[in-house]
Length: 212
Image 1 (cartoon, rainbow, N blue to C red):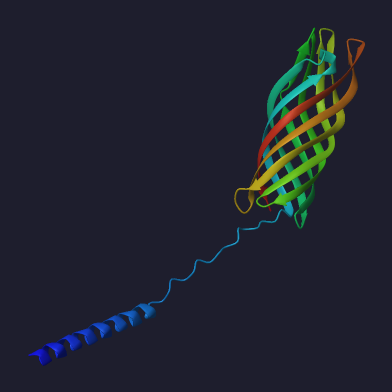
Image 2 (tube, helix red, strand yellow; image 1 turned 90 degrees about the vertical axis):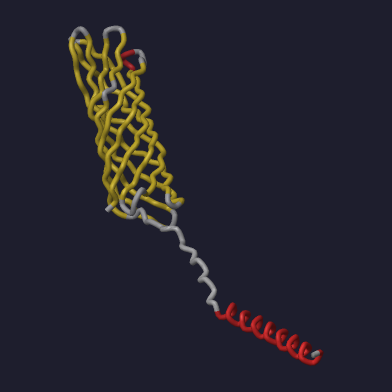
């Protein structure tokens, strides 16, 4: 009996050892889960032509109305071309806008309508955002009205600003821009009287564009 018990115990222990070794082999044979591959964020290039539209908020003042401040909203269209070299982006841009600014004081009223600019842009690509500065020539139509009559002129000056633009999709962009514009000064003749006046403004522009 003792011999049988010893034999059975030895057999059981051998079976347990065999099963443990077999289980370890099965675990070793299970393929390891593949390591997740790191994907670099998409790098988009700013080179090429583009067009877009903006909605604008303007805060301006005219000399003829004692620098009485006026606030207006408007909108516009823009287009340009970029060349990218590393992180640096260079280009040119033009825009045309309509603004409803109306500055008036002491019987004089200066209204601004169509305006536009031709500018250079220089930016730094900090993927996916382009941070840029812009400056160039600005033109704007202004009409001076007094009780004696009215006169309108095309003012020529300069504009400069900063902005940020980002890709929404592979070819759709969104931008926010601040610009200061000094339209210079012209002589207006109303009822035989000459009145010299300039016009300058601060503008915030929000836009959406398409890059080709």
